Image (cartoon, rainbow over all chains, first blue to last red):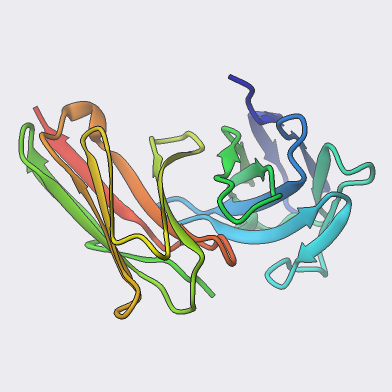
Length: 115
Length: 107
């Protein structure tokens, strides 16, 4: 079964540094999501793409976070500068997005530690 | 803000017992989805129930939906130690998750 690929699996960075995460969704999936999950909490939606367009980025801290999906396929989430509170799991998910009944398929995430 | 809110926050049962967890949501839905997350992994889709359905079964899973109360429940029957995980709900309108229910099944 096709999977959502994320890299790196783990990332350790110092505060004030820049960090980037990459996601390759399942082929043909039009909708892509980035979530942040702090340990012990539920996933928090950061940004949703439909093809290459941002549908919802209301929860994205835009002063330091940016996301792009230039060709409507893979996506990059960037943090600059990183802060201690950004330590979390960053999850990417995709769905067909062509009907309301498309379930999300998640990658296994990137675990970020900011020191 | 989070749309799906699950309760209880934590549930501990013995293997073989049934586990019930609940979800409340705030807006209208087309469907409600339940997901499972093992520690350190991504979420996995379990089951989807449409707004015009009241109950749905899949193996040992049973989901109910009460749109008048904006709530859903997930029942896992004859639980196994391998069911130990966190469980989340989300509605298709915004795909936002709550804090989840942490289920522990003791062997």
